[in-house]
Length: 400
Image (cartoon, rainbow, N blue to C red):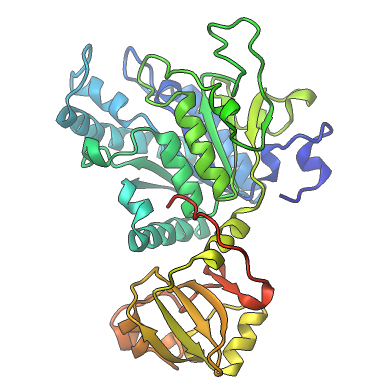
């Protein structure tokens, strides 16, 4: 990621200042007292101060928060023993309300609006639900709100859960093309061995590839409410890095943990581990689109639309002359010029039947024709690769 020297610090290390779209994952152990089930309000206020500072710099912030079960179980008297699935769901239903209220109160001190979003694995993996969730988060960010996301534990079953919010945060980062993911933990980062057991274990400041040697450094999950541990954090790193999103693991037990990441450790900031991908989110996403080997259909465009795509524009219904195939919203389609040559490919914002109904029409007419208002674009430029920009080799898609 390109950044000026002030953003990377005098040591050349990455910092939080480079982020444009930032996801912050908060674990239960940081947010909730494991004995009383009470939220650490002073700590949460410090986190909110950091979020407000990011917003003032023009950075978009999404919070992925654990803690609903930990908060709710105390209020339901479900303490002192492991919970059955239905008890966890009941605790989550109670805790989600209290957790959302706590975030709302602390960010209101800075005039920031909070929105709660509950997701399941299907919301990040099924293409149509993926697009719906992404559009909701994008809209909230555009409206200057801070989405607070948690797994929908009140309805999810054991078979369809992420199981930890590290991987959930990475999936969300992948889904919304975030460029930075912060995982706050009870440890400074990735060590060469478990520092609780190995006295000379060394902190690794940067990781650029998840080699077998790196993965072997992960230890077991710590006791308490946290369900993650370093194993899940490295799994999250793999998802994030594949999507072109850099990730940092840092100790969260500081008065303002985000502020501590604005400066490299060598210059007085917090010690941490940065996982650095080889490409930016948009590049990684477009590389996957370009390399997709099984398009679901095709759309034909006029010469004017083909030329506009070459200038980096989105594909509008007005420039489409024909639709071929049977595809759903979110499926990958090829774009062909009047001579039938493939000039681009991308993810369709409309199913084939709806696309045929809006061929050649202005975006303002879509609602009247279809009975609902979808996107103005048939394929948004963020979801489109123009062949004139250079075809990219096929590769394994990011996990989504």
